Amino acid sequence: MSQQDTDDVSVFEDIEEGDTDVTQGRTITEADVTNFAGISGDFNHLHTDEERMGDSMFGERIAHGMLVVSAATGLLWQSRTPEEREAVVAFYGMDELRFRQPVYIGDTIRVETEVLETREKPDGPGNGTVRNAVEIKNQRDQTVISCEMTSLMK
Image (cartoon, rainbow, N blue to C red; front, side, top):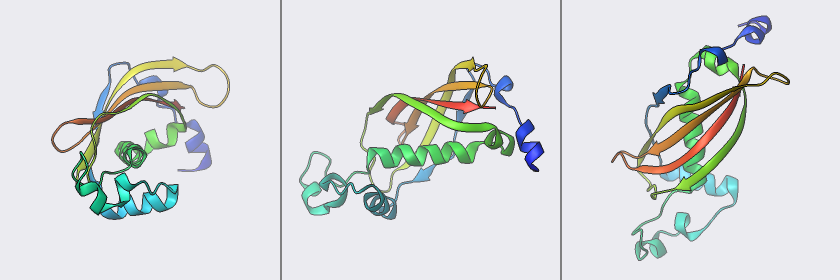
């Protein structure tokens, strides 16, 4: 797409409250946990000390909650069409974030969304905001994280 084409992309008007979507899955790996600890500086024993976590209530190490949220944003991006990707102006915010179940190394997550609200934005970049209910689920269909995410869209 040329710069002119990307400036003209608008999908905001096509998004309706109640629209739902489900992403593909992604397995959380040992490398993910190690890399996230290094990038974030979060070396909490919950994520990095296999021996200590063996005797814990979890029985093994768990993935960082924010790693899982970050992976979920990637799954959401990958599930978008090229036009939808071009229409995203910015990630606008997150509310009601709850870590409901641990995610273990080797768990496969997917993201389920439902549009809760669209709100026109008469000024500034973008045509409006889209607020989604988000549930991150594991391979056992358990909700591991829930939140609301809002995007600024053209």
